[in-house]
Length: 311
Image (cartoon, rainbow, N blue to C red; front, side, top):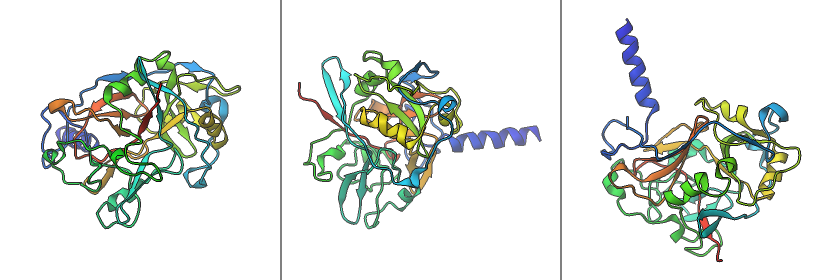
């Protein structure tokens, strides 16, 4: 009986570990139980007066169906010692039937299980994409050799923005935001906002908002409920932060084929960095930690674009 329980636990662990690449960069038809190569990791937290925690703000008011009004205000984020960027207003979305790109209406917007409908004829929006599929956003074959050349999604017209107005960040640039810019460790943290879990990034010149407390980093426990334990913001509180330049990356999970995994518990955002045989790099976060990992090229991950600030 003990042996059967052990085998069941091992199989369950393998299923929950889907989606992230080992340095063998295996083909998509092999079992998805990879070894993750962590490049940058943050856990635990520090406190500064810049947001709201579950302990002092009470229960979240509202949910993802409230259709909030965006107060998005661009603010500068350093991605190297001599380069800064603005983030796009929200995550990237694509309508296959209309061949149309746009940014989500709000930073908290998530397509979710509708991504399972991905196809060239789907009459709806998707927001999880294979690596470098700017020229074929509905590509979903589980074969890494089909994703060897990175084509930036920003090479397309997005909304009313001309092609190449935006771009995807490299792993080094995201690493700089998370760990190298001035006061970096205090300027990011997991949170629960208006019914959605995700990661907040605060701009370089962040000024604390009176009456709000922001706990940086991650909680150190993997269960999704710990997002809210770490930081919970009402819609009104988030709109104050958003107007001051805060960025929210929702935990959209990831797609493999027509299946969605870890929605609401894990966020995975592509970079341009191929990382050789280990698979392309992505920003990955959960309630437990914030890190940069490699991923299978065919995995459908989120995309958040940036625009260079001319200095």
